[in-house]
Image 1 (cartoon, rainbow, N blue to C red):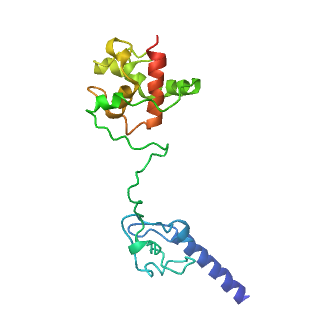
Image 2: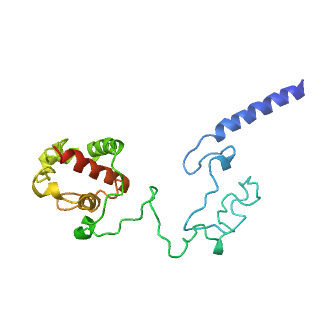
Image 3: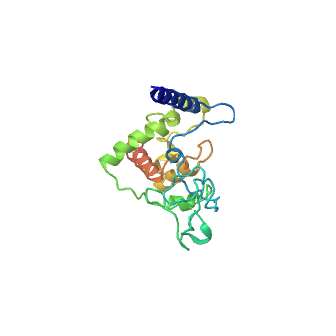
Length: 208
């Protein structure tokens, strides 16, 4: 009877300790069950912990190293960030090379041809993208009468004057790099999407 009573008390004490340890206060973050499930052994690109025993008191790693050890021993100098192959150029996730023309290089930009093949699907996507990024200022019909455009003033009427004859590369460049009141959108819109907007402007907005 005493043994059963002792087991009961021990169980209650363990349960109480379990609930208490889940709490966190001040500088104490509380205890975690299977901490490796919460704190992955992630490789930091620019900083490394090279002490293989760092965090060994916490670790349950299969390789036997400390929980905080995060250096890649297979790379030179235990670097976690691999250096790119010499003379290679990174591409965007859409497969495009970085756009390297400066904002003032409009003449060079005008010679660039639209790499996206024109199709009904592309125009439909261009319509959606134009509505998301352009219509606020330029208006649904491209006449510079969007709500934000009315407040800003001086927004280009894409149907008027010299805008009709602008090369597609010029329009792409202005969206990417900005010009005058037009802000640069290259950091917000992927190149492929900008070219689709260009198709929509040339084929739908400016044909009306």
